[in-house]
Length: 337
Image 1: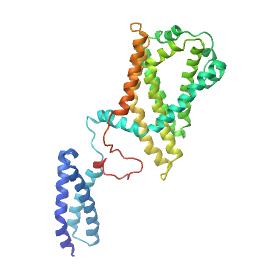
Image 2: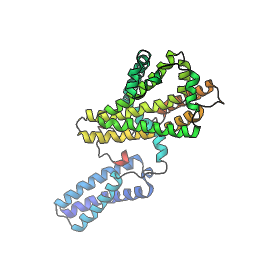
Image 3: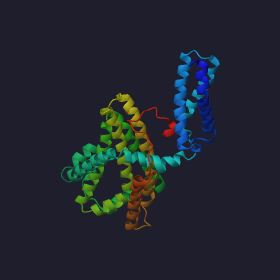
Image 4: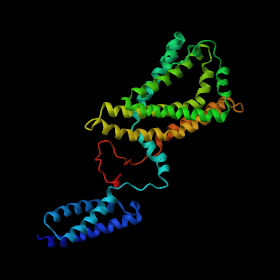
């Protein structure tokens, strides 16, 4: 077959590809059906192969330039980044974030196990040897000794104006969460340290108040804001462990490539937790110290917020999940992602 005969036979496919690219450019991916999207990708790959063949056959330069423009246009539509719309943030929280959490839940489970292990260690250690807990936390031993009362614990939250307390707590919690995530680059050693410190702190204080028969008051106060707050910190710890896992077990990739791939997901998980920290900070600043609400009502509100958060993670965004996994071809067309 001569170059002219090949061009005559192939030109209808190139024209069809151009038409599909024009349609996609004007109406977006939503304007094409699934069959048309697959046809576009198929024709693009065929046209790329045709371009290579025509160059090898020394076809007319004008024909090669024309086909090259078609291939370049199609490449931009097939492999280019999808346009971000004003709904992208909504889609992230209603679909992408909970799906990502469910896909990486084993790391959250490990984070929870570490946290609970050191919560238990702090709880039992403080009752016999408070200095151990103080050493782990780098704090003063007197915090875990002496008489502890439920009213005294509640007063801790009443001494600071609510707006100041809420903003300070929210900022601190976000810093803790981002630290738990970012320290995953230390092969997760830093992430584990953050979980150890926070778990030991919770267990240490719980043990100190239990020793003074005020455990009920302690948990009734902490869980108003702490259920949601600690849930988010544990999930952020899971994001850090995900990065550490990439460094320990990169598979067939280089460690740098594995870290980059997992860090993207970890960052999405950590950033997706910010609304939870905002709500938890509001609870700690305005609900926990409130004198207008009864302890039972405050506890019910706090536990309900935590339950809603976990239900959201469990059920939001259910449906076919097209997000690429680590084993998929990194060159998957953007139209299929």
